[in-house]
Image 1 (cartoon, rainbow, N blue to C red):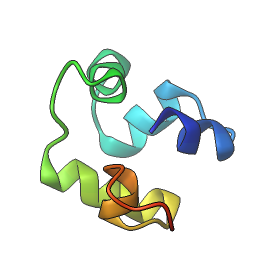
Image 2: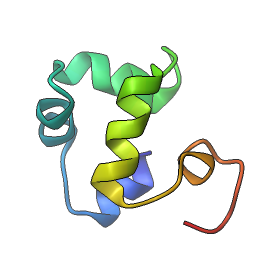
Image 3: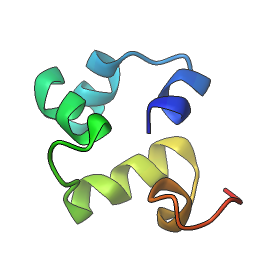
Image 4: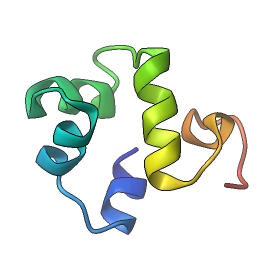
Amino acid sequence: MRELREDHDMGQKEVAAYLEIDQRSYSRYETGVNKLPVDRLVRLCDLYHVSADYLLGRKQEK
């Protein structure tokens, strides 16, 4: 998730605002401390224009 965020020139605060959560919560998803809920996974896929499999590391192709 970090690489995608950085590839899109976004900070954690920007992505957190898009997801309507605070930056600390987003940071925990990005570092793997907390599991990413499905609704937020879908929103991140839409934001980055990638598949859920790609975002979850199950597939190399976006």
